Amino acid sequence: MSSCGHDHHHHGVAGAALAAELDAAEARCVAADQRLTAPRRRVLELLLGAGQPVKAYDLISAFGGEGPPAKPPTVYRALDFLEKQGFAHRIESLNAYVACRKEADGHAAAFLICDCCGATREIEPKASAEIIAAGAAAGYALTSVTIEAHGLCADCRG
Image (cartoon, rainbow, N blue to C red):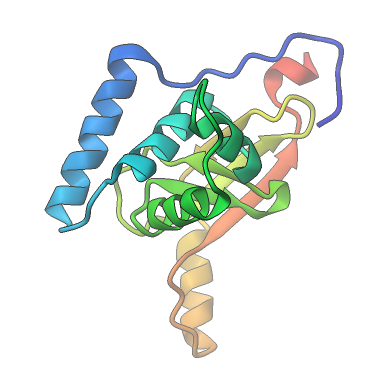
């Protein structure tokens, strides 16, 4: 990310809202016969609290709080689980992860990414149906669609 000379504010989830998000994730896991283990819950908590994409190694260092960092496989396994369950997305162009707060299973994801401050916003892409149809016409059974669009957010443009 470049520096534009102004303050960058990222709004993660905290307090009661964070607890509610984690409880909802727990309930979704129970309904899907999955377990939100302590490491998985901790990684989701860090993603939700960040309010922006986070690199895996930043999650590894933050994982233990004041204690020692987590071992990389612990965090990578948690991220893999969170992605598969729809709680997180990997943003390829940033090599980072972001919490998904949409409850639709297997929804298409599109991200608007600010190249200045790193603010990332998830939107529901209308083009995903066309991509899935084009994939089917070409003989592909697509399991996910992720679109990444880079530019400048309103704050950085102003």
